[in-house]
Amino acid sequence: MGATRKHGILPDTHLKRLIAEESISAIRHIDDDQIQPASLDLRLGDIAYRLISSFLPEQSENGSRNDSQPLPLLNMLHLYYDELVMYEIDLTQDQGAILEKGHVYLVPLLERVALPPHVRGRANPKSSTGRLDIFTRLITDLNAGFDEIPLGYQGPLYLEIVPRSFTIRVQTGLALNQLRLLTGRPTVSDPQLRTLHRSSKLLYHNDDDPVESRPLASQEIRVDHGLFLGIDLRGSDADREIVGYRAKKNSHVVDLSRIGYYSALDFWEPIYRQPNNTLLLEPEEFYILASHERINVPAGYAAEMVAYEAAFGELRTHYAGFFDPGFGAGDGPRKGTKVVLEVRPHDVPFLIRDGQTFFKVVYEHMLDLPEHLYGASIGSNYHEQGLTLSKHFKR
Image: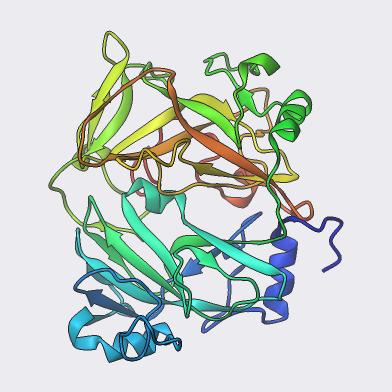
């Protein structure tokens, strides 16, 4: 592919080449604005299946675990139609269609792939999807894993969708998730992370000074298979009293085609700073919070947010997690951008405190430099974000 590296995330130039070669194709024309510096937006197709429940995607023809011939997903869906499908929804309507809160939907996507043998994929919800508490998982044929595309996969793509906090309105062509393609083992090692921070400054202090940005000293950063970040419960935006938002239990439909349209207070309860800078997270509530530090992703790298301790299954710290090259770089003197977290505790309450370790970010090499970087020049929504709700709400 003309790359200078053997391991890395495929940049926008490579994605365009794969589209031209029809290694990435679609029922409808793939628009330029779907192509991000290190990922491709995937769009909903024409139909949604309202499912009775979620399911494990790899199934055999007779349902026996001993059968070695699994079925393509749509074949399996039709075989078990009465057990799995409640009804079908037409997403091509002018006004779109309603996906109810708490229900499970499966949507074949417009895009499909025929990947080269050395290329695989990972998927993630888009930032706006995660901030609306919409749970999504990419599914491929004959693969038991979610959000993963195996090496050299050729076939259709599907999206499982579960709106958790809000009932939503969607339609054909809307993008809820994004695909990142990669080759080899692109992860930046811990020693490389420390070296990269010395040269490019990956983390900055959460100061309000608009003129000078203070990077963390080398001895202040914490690395262990990724870069650790903490939670901000002091507040750092214009209104320093607000440190987060909690989704309201009952609200109107969110039409995902409407940008900057809704009043935040109709859907969210502000969370105000406590005297001791702590917050009690209640089980099965959904919170929008922000990182204690500001992050920078240099041009030759991409990053992904991960839970810093997988054993903490009772606390989910994010849904969306991709950071494109240029995130937090900024054109002005202020460097670094806060990370917005989509937090949902399960089963038990959690008491968290300002600055404590809450998640980590894994950096990965790009295969080549992208043509464009994340930021205002390509219409990125969150390039200078603080504690920011999804783009559907008035700023």
